[in-house]
Length: 272
Image (tube, rainbow, N blue to C red):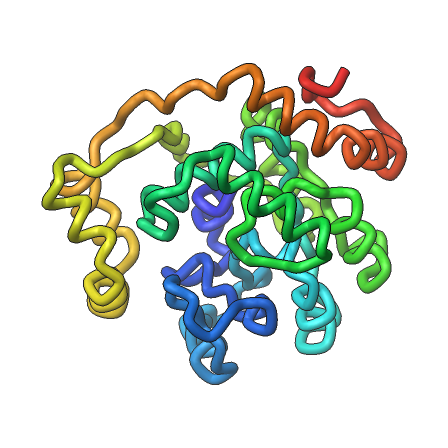
């Protein structure tokens, strides 16, 4: 979505699309990913926004981090929030590969991480890299609904966005009160990527290297270098049926609550 929105001349989004600033209260001090926790540095991301009508960023963690909604409200009370919801089973599985790719949790299997995350949930303990936390949408949306008015929230279903990309983007522009008269360049489809070899894997898992590269190389250039030299497309391993069933049982009640909250049936066949 960011790719399309950034094409519009009245929209500004920074090179660092996911600064995590409004999640800073929910992230441990020794977190491996670099985040922006200083307000001056955060605001500096938008110094080139000039007279753009819509200025924003896209940190997905804001939806499920307990303090984010209130932090956004306190700093920017008139914000407009775009929420994208994808089948929570797919989100949990994607998060697993994201952690592996980033080198955050190298040794534990998918089921072992699920065991640990279920234990944390049972103890009502929040962890930013939980495979499960992001998929409990009904409680997250209720949190935002308590803090923001109805006309400040726009909920998008990811699977519907994929099928009707440009109409969905146009609906977002309407939500942002922006003119829709623009022809978009079609975005390349996302692909599952893995390191090209052992050397590239070691390099990409090096936190110092990633931090320095992020500081001195613009995002777009960094992505091109990565795709040219460090990563390659691959087929993501299929989710085993017993693992899919486990996730279905974990999320079933929340999806039913989400149905009622949104007043509609969702296009996630796992749950129906």
